Image (cartoon, rainbow, N blue to C red):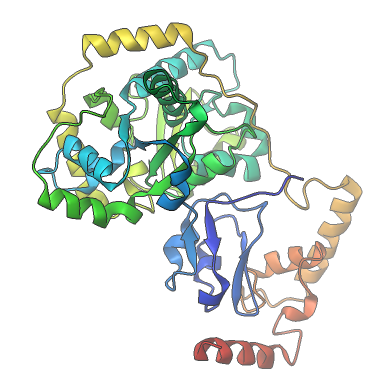
Length: 434
């Protein structure tokens, strides 16, 4: 099994073992042993719930620093529409682009053309798909990983069309390579990310292929610097941008706006992991029918509500609506560019998306039955309180961990007389900062 990487890191010395991350994890991938959190890589879907729950800063997004970008001769910021919703409306997108260039980027890429291209490619994909339905959007990396880990029977229903940020990275490298005489490898395409999950889609794409992006920078990491520049600078156009901004572009930062041109009757937008999981469960049970396409965003509010954004979700959403209303429809030049690239490019994923091999699911059937019996037997000895003091989120998880040799029976405080004393020692040291 290939080693899995993730879009966050856990700094053990900052962890107090409070178990908030363990309780927040929707796939029960976190364990807290000896007062320190750790992750089971195969179960983690990079949703970022643990980052939001951590109050000590022990869990942080694994984005790139500007120092890492110095090896490139030309650095281009690939900007998510959600970025512009983070600032007061008096700071127009062109001013934000200028601030990005003052911060160290050589150019800013607004991927309006790429969004329209992918929208068209998805409509064509849905029209030609022979089933089973519904097809599922793959633009949110968390949703893709959720399907890989928890709903392997639905993995073939993930749509196999590239994300706009990837096509944008390919196109900007082609264009700036030709314009500047640089090799594509000398040009950095850096995504300005609203969430850490986009980072993992760059570091380790779900389909196993490579990403055309070279890294990501979280909005929250550069927000204060951008705001400081905006407050002192005058309004200005963005001469280094590609100038493709239109109202269509801002739809992709908002909920229920990814594919508004699809049939409303057979199109279902979903927000938040808990609602997505409920609908996926109903699909597996055959309870949802006559739906062609699911637009799924793990975050409430879609990308505008990502865990690396800074503004209140509802304030940001209001700004998004104002930005949409204030922009023009796509120009003739943009339409011509879309027609050109649509006829010349292939927008399919470079490799298929497959179910993830999860420990306990990929072993021999007889071993799986034996381990399940062992876990069931273990469950009968546990109190069923789900206290979490063993380091697993529930008694069932502890029993499964024991059956997989990932934990010891005596880690349950009810089965070991000295377990409480061990925990008392661990947490006394943690409280003192030892």
